[in-house]
Length: 219
Image (cartoon, rainbow, N blue to C red):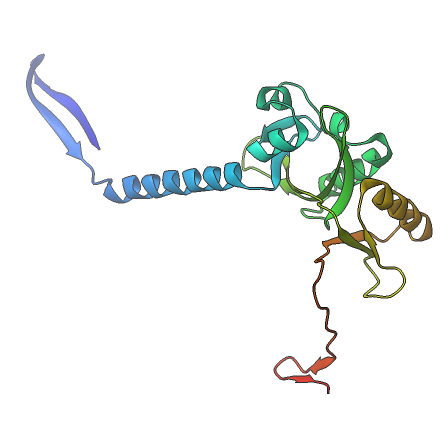
């Protein structure tokens, strides 16, 4: 990095004074940061999960290719005025608003939750959503979200249940919607967990105890 100035005597330039500063480390750090940002962009763009950011009014700021593929909107449609309220089914809009309000009030992260959304053609898309609040050093806070399309069949259960009658295997949107209505009616304060169901798999229950160091398996 070079800075210089003219040296004058009696109004006439007689020399140029220069200062050279070694900025090798700074340039290396800038290159490493650029490479890291490019890797992050590649990761986001190639992710199978929907990744997006929106402002605190719900207006989309950025979306990845998966969002375009799942919902059928172009990237420009997303970022030129489309909002969360236009994607989320009206029956689930309060849940999305509650999550956003919790973050504004100080909760950086909230548990994953399920939302019924609608693609551009009106078809239902069930998503499992994880969001967090981004607070830049300068500028306005935004919400970053990762949403996973729920592919059937899935196992659904209330978060306070490990197994038993409250668990159910669902195979389509209608069954899932019915289960969600029943779960909300019975226990509205507990989220519902949704997991991929592995067909033709063998399930084995194992009892074990641990003191934090050693694990003893019963039987």
